[in-house]
Length: 174
Image (cartoon, rainbow, N blue to C red; front, side, top):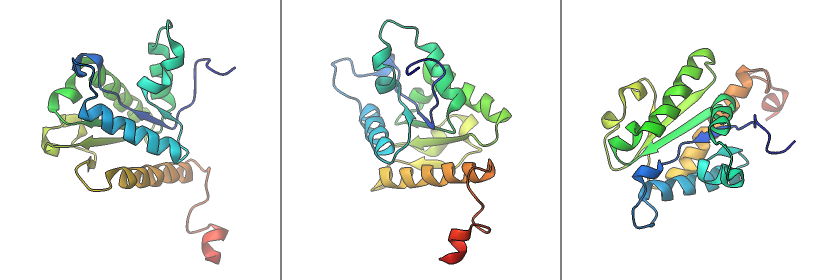
């Protein structure tokens, strides 16, 4: 049935925790970036877990089982921040560290660490093994969606869902 746990998600877009949101109700730069990325991923056809949107219909329910199901089923996790403390806040760190643990068991999972207005060296050390993504680039959303598409397609090929490029009949005909 729709809405039952577990739900299957292709992507997990990390959200800024409530304790770091603007006190005056204005959206933060991080939340505006996250909404922009979420909308672009959804328009590109990716089922994206984004707590602010994905949990809207779950009012009054415990949200942790939904977050856990999303972490389990997501192939890609996008973590973004404009300040070091955002990555290290309790809930954000809890989510990305659990995803990295799941990645140890499933090498097809990919974490994309995104940063803006800071050096990539200011991100958590746990991200140092991964290529990071600079959100200061003009057109960053299109580049990020293109990168996600590449990661998802490669994951599907490795899992046997898509043919390899070298053996694909379609690719040989082009």
